[in-house]
Length: 104
Image 1 (cartoon, one colour):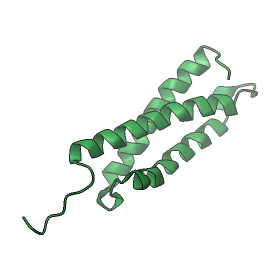
Image 2: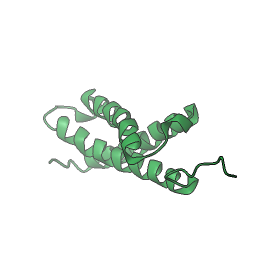
Image 3: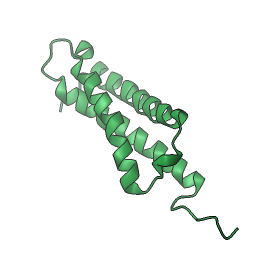
């Protein structure tokens, strides 16, 4: 139709972009949590690691806008998806880093 405007991303590319950014940010947050809690006696229980995760989740939404994702179309489900994907990758990667005593 003549009134429809083509978005910058197709629905498939929008989903791939959001998923890729959430996954990468989860891994980056895990490495950052490992760096931030490196000197702690019990790094796994240090709340600074969770603060890093929260920051990684919040910083994604402005980045998505800069990339060109239309944030007006985001529903609660989309926000929860980004948070869950970031948390999942952070949890697994930071768990591996803690288990192997990796330091940076």
